[in-house]
Image 1 (cartoon, rainbow, N blue to C red):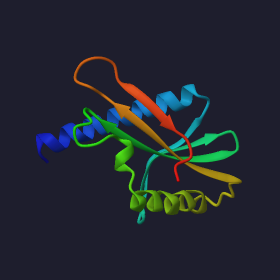
Image 2 (image 1 turned 60 degrees about the vertical axis):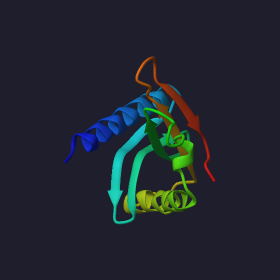
Image 3 (image 1 turned 90 degrees about the vertical axis):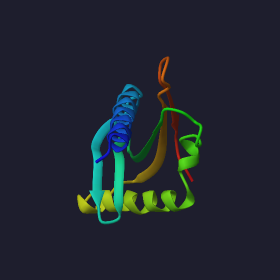
Length: 122
């Protein structure tokens, strides 16, 4: 593992912690973090009232190579939709509504991080 990979993993872990804290402050309940199955990974699974929220967290230190929003391709969104069905199914849960959200965290070298929560992708 290179130092670049380790730095990216640390930035990602930081972003997920910031996102989870932000969403909890908004009244959501974290049900799972970094859940994996054969189809992929969900960064955060939350409950927002009666809604199951599958949340993708994208963290960047700069927007030189695109914003966190631009990292959500149609392929990624399709994968998140499949994963959103897998998580409750694996637990034997029937959920009335599922939503896919994005939390974009920008952690510049100087100054505070910014957090943007986008509800209901696609």
